[in-house]
Length: 219
Ligand code: AMP
Image 1 (spheres, helix red, strand yellow):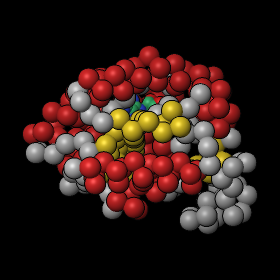
Image 2 (tube, helix red, strand yellow):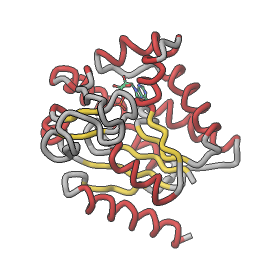
Image 3 (cartoon, helix red, strand yellow):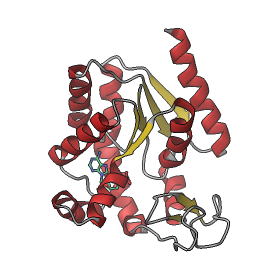
């Protein structure tokens, strides 16, 4: 099963992904997380991606596609894609690659939310540099303030690209390139599940599960 999760930065993709993978027994493939671990490991790819990421710009398609195709193969084609595809070129390449492996996208989940809300959400976001778990200073507090629940004495950090001016650039990149991905999927005949992402986290999860289950029972 392949699920694509779309939505602007701060829409709650990471949080919802964790729940989707538990429920449907899939692997979570976050292009942003993979890039951050490549950077932390100092790989060639990490070095190439660094400048783009720090300024909130998209990393070139060629680098991302190769990286994600490898990750999907490793996951045995059962995954939730979070943050990928972000351009029409990436979306088209993903369809081709899945078809080559007799696989396909089962659901495109689009988290819809206003820029003003996500700007507020992202500035309060803190994450664990070790396991990648995400918290919020108001709405998703860790058990001990400033520290990861799982990695215990690991202090939480604010991602450099979660600072206000970079957020504006990331939202601009989303609107310029990624919203066209929704159009691509509609045209390619994929069923798009629109989810209002400005609500209680549990309610949003319930709606996502209900809509995905509706798709599988409709077959
Ligand atoms: P994210 O954590 O998904 O918001 O991604 C963080 C940063 O990684 C983005 O601002 C981009 O610079 C880069 N990135 C992640 N996924 C992609 C992608 N599919 N295409 C291009 N750049 C990406």
